Length: 96
Image (cartoon, rainbow, N blue to C red; front, side, top):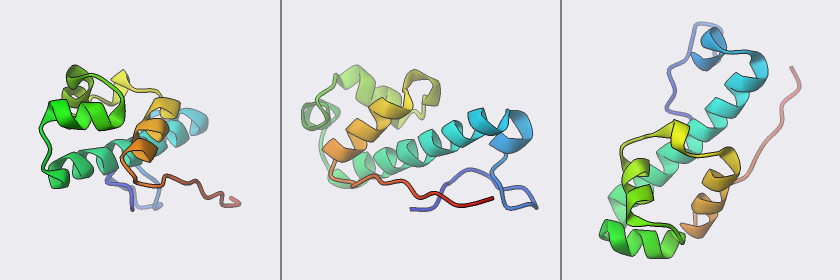
């Protein structure tokens, strides 16, 4: 899944224009995971309560996902939630 973050003319997400390299990399990964979870929630047809049960979290946290509250979720939690949703998160490294 491609990131839904806006991209600059250099091909990097706008996070790189606003944050340090390391912060931008983490925000971009969190954004990709969050967007994947939002799409899963949209497509799964479950209520927020049912989705919360699948994800092992609360309905309030599912609501935070649906509203795109990226600052409410750490990278490691988003990876766990994506895995529980069956999204098979993975990481690729690229030399600069």
